[in-house]
Amino acid sequence: MLKLVELILTAEIYNRFSELTEDDIPKEIRKIFYGRNGISRPLVVKLDAAKRIGNVDEVLKLPFIDLNTFTKQFVVTSFDAAVKWFASKAEAVEHIRNNPVLAYFYQNYDSLNVSYEEAKKRNEPKHSDREWLRSVIAELEKSPDTAEMLGLVRIYSPEDIKVDFSDVALDSEQIEEIRKIEVAMEERSYLKRIGLTDIGKLLFIGPPGTGKTTTARALSRKLCVPLVEVKLSMITSQYLGETSKNIEKVFEIAKKLNPCILFIDEFDYVAKTRTSDEHAAVKRAVNTLLKSIDEINLIEDGVILIAATNHPSLLDPAVWRRFDKIVEFPEPPESVRKKIFELALSKVEGSYDIDELVKLTDGFTGAEIKLVVREAVLKALLRGEKKITQQDLLEAVEEVKGRLCLKTSY
Ligand SMILES: Nc1ncnc2c1ncn2[C@@H]1O[C@H](COP(=O)(O)OP(=O)(O)OP(=O)(O)O)[C@@H](O)[C@H]1O
Ligand SMILES: [Mg+2]
Image 1 (cartoon, rainbow, N blue to C red):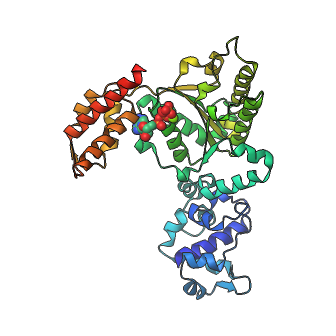
Image 2 (image 1 turned 90 degrees about the vertical axis):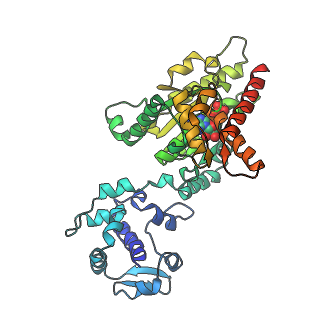
């Protein structure tokens, strides 16, 4: 019952205070109100939705809540009585602490010890909602021009991202760079005030399978912002001028979806050194890319740009300058390999010696370590066992080493 009253009261308070925004509505409550065009004011609580939340009959016994049987909407008949009743419930304080809309109203109410700012910190903003992203995309699909842009990228809601930072083993330098982006995101208005706008462009360099894509995804989840992914090879066209146009569209889409992370993979595909014998279209594409990077930034556009490449040596020198941070993803050193083994084996039963494995896997990437574990698990399953042995892992290491030799001999 309390949950349903919270819903009704949240709608009522939100409608009364126009300074409250969608970000103030708790995430679970927001999900109830998403319509075709996002969340519209005023919020109305309908009978159908209410039935899913709590006991409607119980709530209707309260003297200050009524149901309009014609519109099937709930109405608060006495606001004062409603807020007083809610505040008198012992368990209500916890609800208010986690609900910025309620906290906004109640922070100056009687002796309730609640804070709007604190509640806001606990609540994820609307751009973390899958439904929000869907409504923005639906809007963009309406115009043929922007609909075409959507075809160039993959867009993920942070809610749909499966990895988080507890799944990635990073070294202290990588962690620090990621942390800087997090605080820059939080302190955007401060950075704008002091004129530090050129922030939030990272270049991830390193061999395949070292965690570049995974880190970009985990960051999206951590920051609760959508991830716009694009592989440059996918938007490159043989037609003159088409690649440049596509690049512009990708940046435009990121700006429309802000705040977000724009993750450009296979960055070297376009950003290669402009050699003299190159086709004019290629040069033009590089120039467009440079210009687009110049014209986007976290502080003003709310876009974090992350570019990734396996071939940093191919990059045009002018490209390097445009990133405020180069984050290296090298073949992981012992300490990181150890962490990756621990992560990969955390749910696997068996007896094994990770330190020995770490010593034997010099030059292995994170992806290859995961492959070792997968092979070992399959070997054990083949014997009909769920518990793996050190022998399984050692054999798997040898097999993956064999693969590595194949890779380098071609
Ligand atoms: N440091 C790491 N910690 C945990 N897992 C890792 C790490 N590095 C790689 N992996 C695992 O390896 C796989 C591949 O990683 P990912 O796709 O992030 O690599 P990448 O650097 O983007 O590679 P590519 O350059 O080929 O795109 C993922 O399953 C990921 O979980
Ligand atoms: Mg990748």
